[in-house]
Length: 461
Ligand code: SF4
Image 1 (tube, rainbow, N blue to C red):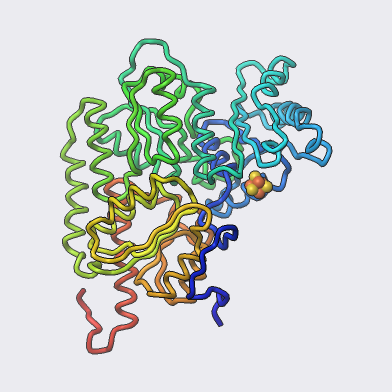
Image 2: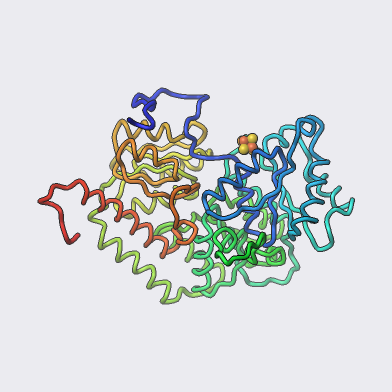
């Protein structure tokens, strides 16, 4: 029996109902971004259910402990305001857990009642609840605006507002805002910059925090993540690069407006062309030449594409996820000769439509895409029921469609609750492109092996 047996092939226009959303709410993105600051305790200012849910989702995604505090609103605080809860929480957290930084975000509850984080943080400092040398940073993350990607963007800006400075002495570094991607991706971005000989400050950086080793000793604050001192140098950088408009534009524009650090917003470097654009921007911003070792890695991707494109050409793919991931992914599929037949993202914005139209303008297939509230996995499933595809790319929630429709699924994006790998192996850069090509060809060829007649069951492919 089909798991999603209530999904009908007939599509009725919906204006109020969302089913199986391709998004989640702001605070989890803020929590994830805060984890990329060294010795930082994310703090959820609201009732504790949100914090428990967001911690558990990140734990299920990374299979790691995720630290975060909560103001634990009661009905009283929901009516009269959560100031005393937050002040008490700040005191408790610095006393009991001793982080260097508390990064406060809000929930729909504290946003609706209108708590003023700036004022409460100042009061905590004035009342001596913030020990010397320790910090409180904050951002507003109303869940009824945008998605988890918006929450990430807001917290990155909050981190910059808290720590970034300008001394006036240029340091020649490049600021990298890596976008909502995996710790493995952040590590790969750092490695690629290192290969080019470009000195960077990357914030946030969750590599080592949410994919660390098992040593026998639990460290609540591992010695990883960007330090406040490093963020403090970002106002003196030669430029900033943001990877993914939705997740990084706020931060890049802030650095430009506040410190006159020129910024460039690119796609996450997923696939050949987006990685080329990233390498080119780095080269220009830092005034370096691209070394042979980078050319070599690029050449391997070109070689892999030419070796396997015949298995991929014309194959149709349905995708769901975040816009910053989807746009370069669609571009990569087109480079592989594939057809991004259906694409949905719960994150809104007109720009997505414009970029998708530009990417798809020469595709000889009526591809469908939608973003915003009703662009959910229910709609994606309905499209698939009307005309099926060869491959699904998306998070774990897509496994229901995969099973019902008997279509292979490549897990990508957030969250992945039922497979490993995303925390350790990148999908960005040339190495990440090779990994994606391996996964895609593997899925398509496994299906060919399963379904082909015995006479076509080839040893050599
Ligand atoms: S939508 Fe609001 S109540 Fe629900 S988890 Fe997000 S912040 Fe909490």
